[in-house]
Length: 146
Length: 405
Image 1: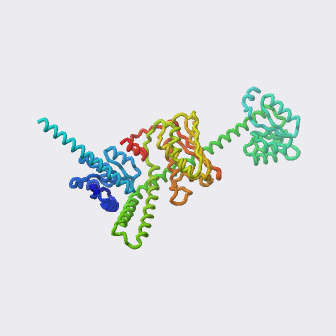
Image 2 (image 1 turned 90 degrees about the vertical axis):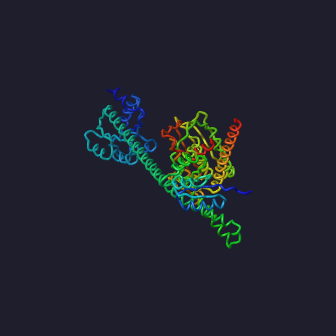
Image 3 (image 1 turned 60 degrees about the horizontal axis):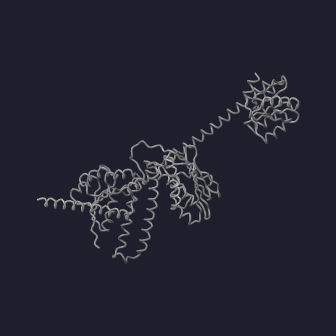
């Protein structure tokens, strides 16, 4: 079975972490882009098609929650997984209330991350599929009317 | 006047009169008895001391001039051995010197013979009042000292907790880097092209150790962060029987492996309690896990839930090894553990105590080496609801969010 790569954007100000996790995700067959700040994340999203964003909550400048808000506003179909090195799961909950798919505590198990990534990707695919179907039936009805 | 005094003296006062003149003694005893006050009697200083050995006295009325051991000598012994007992001296007519010397030696006061009964009663009453006052003062001082100690301990724990959580947070990021790097190396090592590299096993072994080390550090940091997290309690009415059953089930397997018998009793009068069921369960699990670890094969663990006034007490009793006295006030501190490195984080009871305090309760421990340990948690029946909006939480709450999703 050929794995369809998930297009992942990894956002964290910890460069070493981004670098290593990117390598691992790529090795696992995903297509990974990296951003080191919230700003950079939004810039990347403008230019690149992304399925899932893995987003660190605590970043200098525009933090994870702010970035998440922007992502949901501009790209409602993109799924977001929050990462936190903080015990402050309260921000993770806030993130999920804002529409994040899930959260992970650092240091996270790769298997957990991988599973959540798959699930997020699946939800996005299904969502898009429903939109396509809805559009199709809408078009059909429209043409039927004529 | 007689009536006034009569009502003024505590009928339960423990009195002793010491005098070698039997008629005098008997008169006093009889007259006091008429008023419903009982008084013991001794005919000599030696007799007085042997009575005191058996029964503590509040006030001793002591004649100074006695054959054998004289009153002043007896007084010294009494004050030395029973400093709380007050002594009233009876001196001969016009021998005020004896009286003054006696007061210097610790007597409450003296009366010169012949004495008036009313005077004696008045003095006894004053002496007794002094004793009661001093007892109160002592108790108050003790209480204050205890409170101060508790406050110091609480503050110490709080600041330790905050510091530890800050450190834990800072450590999680580098831990994540180490973990990803080790994972990455492992991934490469498992590639086909790497199948034949020399000493591959050494690399794998070392990488495994790095990962295990990271796991251990992560357990510590996550537990620490869990302990100080501002948590938003989700309170509900908790069915204690169900909760207890669930909790015991969770621990049953581990206990079964060690052949430990777990029994639980709920006082039916306990009723229900409003609190955070997830946190309460964590507290019970922590205490039970500790109990299982401390108890040897064939031991017993008893869980009891009973009402205490407006509170509910949860008691976990084990027949384990017990906690040495010198460790008893350390067990709630973070990182205190008697387990070998890597097995216990030393955070279990620290976290437990933080939770109990957040739930508005308190936790106490009693232990006897070789016999076992009792942990007693008291929680209010109604947890005050936090007025802050829901901006905090706990991993458990998150899990609930998931379940709803």
